[in-house]
Length: 304
Image 1: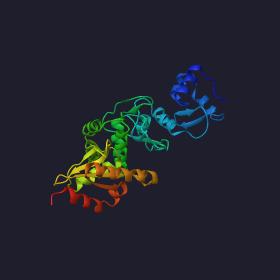
Image 2: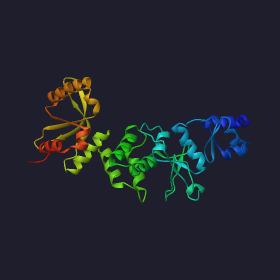
Image 3: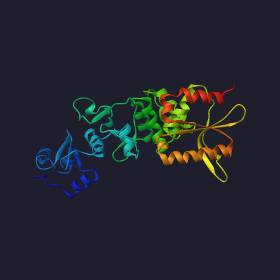
Image 4: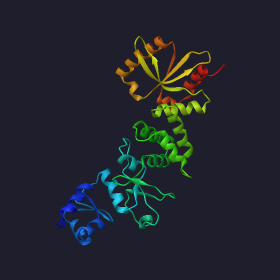
């Protein structure tokens, strides 16, 4: 049968998502043998040092807390795991990233398959419940551990777009460390965010402009789009002759019939209201086949 536990232990289980570390249980009068016997009657051993008060698959939030409980004081959720606990709405992983301090007995030896431990050279401060690295630290680490440049761009753009951190805070975090994997890619994304990018497509667009030596556009600028109408456009240039060149960067949502019809009205009213040349490009084109579009853009915004 499950161990007899005090009201204090039950309260701890409620606060810790149904989890308890062996050291916590012992401090509350539940011996390790009692914890192991409980696993025959409805409890579950999650990891060498963590138990759950019910059997079955754990949720990802439970796994994140179990990782911190397993490795003990001083350990911090890191990367995507820390971002998810801070409210990030992105693609979390079932593998939990955890920063483990120097000298921890978990630096070597067996560990749960869902736990990925990191041992940074620098001291990492954190807070919150469960304990986690700051958003800026977690975002830079997640970007450094990313598998592709697109993944790096998505991570950094999304945390800024969701107002969890500013580009300036990310840059201070990056430049305050001596060695960061993928640092050039991260700096390139931060440059795009500093220039006004608010989406992955806009960040990729600015990156391609820099790579091709095009003038720096004004991002998210408001122009008159018809009588009494003001519209925010993704990017705007001034051609050498002074004419306005507007670029709209379309995500996949613009392929829907209703959105496409709205885009036609928007396109026509912007041209009529501003006299601008209005170009449109899809996110896919910017990332996978940029040549044809950027050749046209360059012919308009570069001196002849």
